[in-house]
Image 1: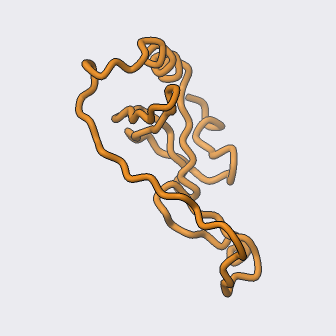
Image 2: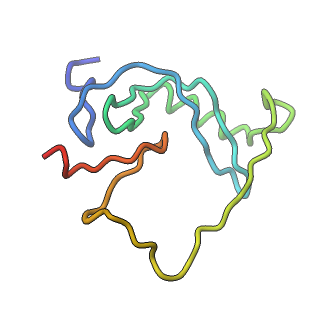
Length: 110
């Protein structure tokens, strides 16, 4: 990879190699693919996949994610987001929540 590939396209921070889990919808089924190689941003945790990884994920999706091929099965609870009046918060500006649930106030870094 060239040096530019090591910079996050979203926040311009550095990235590192990691193995990640990704969730995909296949029809009305939610499936998880574990141990997917990715470049992960050190700041915003955005994930970037190379062409070979993307090809392999697409090929896996093409198999239909047969239950017999699954490494294991997880039971996942489903929640409905509350509707109605927004909850009052102390935040004056929007915040970003990453995939790990960490809340970032980008304006505090400026």
